[in-house]
Image 1 (cartoon, one colour):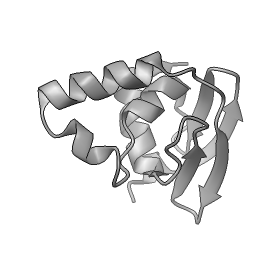
Image 2: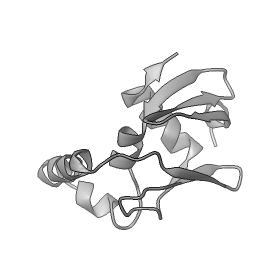
Image 3: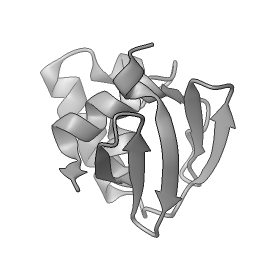
Image 4: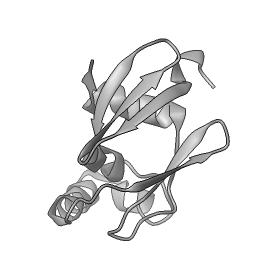
Length: 107
């Protein structure tokens, strides 16, 4: 695991979370972005081409976004439990860092 991708702090709000990594970089990341980038066996195949990705994102965007439960998986990932169905995706710290850099707000 890349040293800068170690998650050291997670602060959960109603619509977003604040993630702090071991290099002291902090990001505000909306739950919708996390959900749209789920890598689980149900969600990943729905993102294989641009058209499927657009349809998947539109479907996710229409769902009522409720603050998910979060569980740490070992020392390398988080599992978000979404009331809208998906809760099997494991988001590695490295994956969360990539999402944060591309779609989050740097603090």
